[in-house]
Length: 298
Image 1 (cartoon, helix red, strand yellow):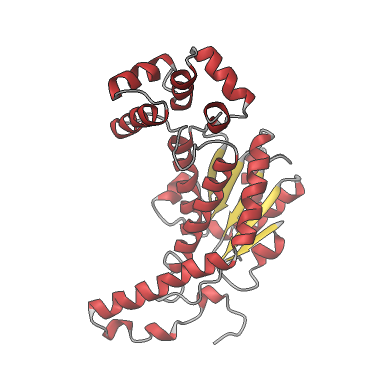
Image 2 (cartoon, one colour):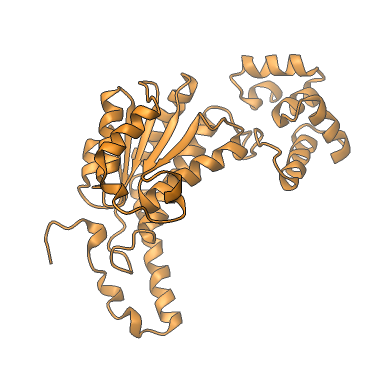
């Protein structure tokens, strides 16, 4: 066994006889190992908090959050970015993901994509990364040339760089302004980083995006008051939010406020609670930097 292998490439002694176990025994080991992802993330919470605060600062300055990765890591970044749009009502230009190999790599493996350092640099240039942006590189081993080169180019342009890896002494984290090294140990299936490593990455990405959105006023308590009404389920959620927080009698009345607010839950709540029209409600929200609590919890 090579001594310099990334942690993600080591053999897990607990699952050496995986193919000889009963189905339940096999799943019990996977479940036991998955718990280590949560513990690994807990151990790097201070670094994640630093990332959240820096991303929130970037948003306040008109900057962007950009995820970049290859394979599973890249797919997780694109997933988290895409979920920010309906959840927090942000534009696709404010939060987005870049994956090695482009959109085709979202559904299939693109041979050699993660090894293409030049493509990583070009992706950052194509995104026109600026000093006010935050670029989050994601690589389980921390050694993917595409991601490392992208982060280096982002740093050269003055952007804040965050490195997420799951291996000890990961090169990606050594290169980053904010290193997040959540070491989960060898995978149940050797090298299959879509398992524990991917789980830890998803937890961290959830924290980075959700935490930053909370910090810039995209929620009221734990309610997503900037939700976009893009399907029937979200329309009903919006009605409930306006009825509950806006202290409106029923969903029909809540919908009347939503229509008058142009579909904005937050604006509709202010209109209902403060007895003002859309223009005045929007002005109150702007004056409070978008924090609903500052407008209605007087």
